[in-house]
Amino acid sequence: MHKPKRPFQQLKTEEHRINGRIYALEVRLVIDNAESQIVSLKEALKRAEDLELDLIEVVPNAKPPVCRIADYSKFLYDKKKREKEQKAKQIKVVIKEIRFTSNTDDHDFDFKAKHAEEFIKEGSKVKAYVQFRGRAIMFKERGELLLLKLGEHLQEIATIEQLPKLEGKRMFMMINPKQSKKNLSH
Image (cartoon, rainbow, N blue to C red):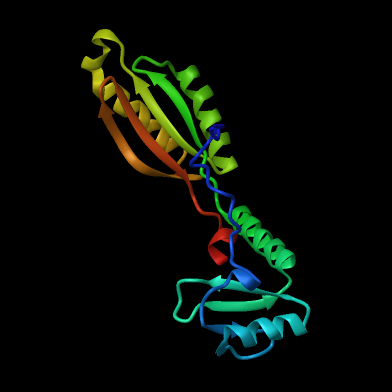
């Protein structure tokens, strides 16, 4: 006897029930440019057939289920298009890191502060941190002063989201770009 390779493999089901796969007795029928109405499934199927379109179950959990008369492939296309537009509107937050040591000199500080400024102008958040090595942890206040100096340097274009905080051998601070005037008007 031949044994199937994947006995519990489920058949790929469509996202929505359409036409003959709808099993409710009554449905709330939604047609473009008309009020919704509760009709029998037979009548809804007949109307869809008369218009040469599909009956699509849009909200299966409603009492009675909500169905729409439309071309199924166009319905799916429009749905994907809407989802793509929503995804494009989402804001992606990028966090850039800048690392200092407790004895970073002025030239290195200026160099890294310039990078932080560029990141902020791009719209990215900046996570600035001081890495303590060995006995340098004894000079925590040096690291805190360094991070606060960076925050002061960027105060024109950024705000400090989180003040310097020590976690293990790292002290870090989060800096956000300030909202521009055009973003606030929307």
